[in-house]
Image 1 (spheres, rainbow, N blue to C red):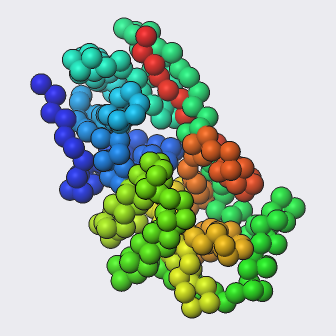
Image 2: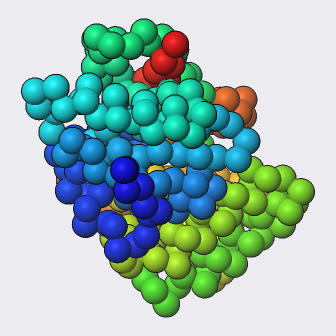
Length: 299
């Protein structure tokens, strides 16, 4: 009998141990991400064949697994997949794995007992940039970004302030304004994002994240939060700001990269979810590469 459990803050050490063994390049694979989105995706987990297996049972799409995390040894991957398949069959679900990052797809294609179809998931593929490029914004490709920052500096006084527990309510205030402007109560995606961000903010210190606020003309107007994804890459989980202030988002991103992540060569700014405006914005920063993701569909 599989012992699947819901995720709690006390599971951070366990998750971190398996994540460190695997070092995934994909943005979903931090304990923070699983924790903050646990209620939306109805995550549950179990350790199977010495691998951490995470299942999502969201309300508006079919259940799915994430790729098992841990040390792959002598058939334990295929054995874990067999056990997960029985669990899915017992719940009348069809087995599928999502967020399969490029480089491990052969684990699924090479399964002997299953017929697996792999489908490219562009909407969930991550944008990755060098920290140096986001900090310096050098070159013709970044002319527009530098213009935004120069105008911002001409028109406003500003101060970069690292987030501590005493400033969490300021982040909430900015988040509330962002949500009100988008009528979150009538938009499920925005509402769920707000709830997930609140989970992170309420557990900011225990999750071990870093964050910063930008104070503009003596008022906090934007904040951002991230953490190290693996040994050479940081991931940005939240970035919210007053869009009425020209250049604020650009300045917030540049300052966060300049002041933090000194051990990181790369910054993962997550996916665009297929949203045209978000895709255009992420491409405008000239990613050095994408973390391509696939879905493994068991037929």
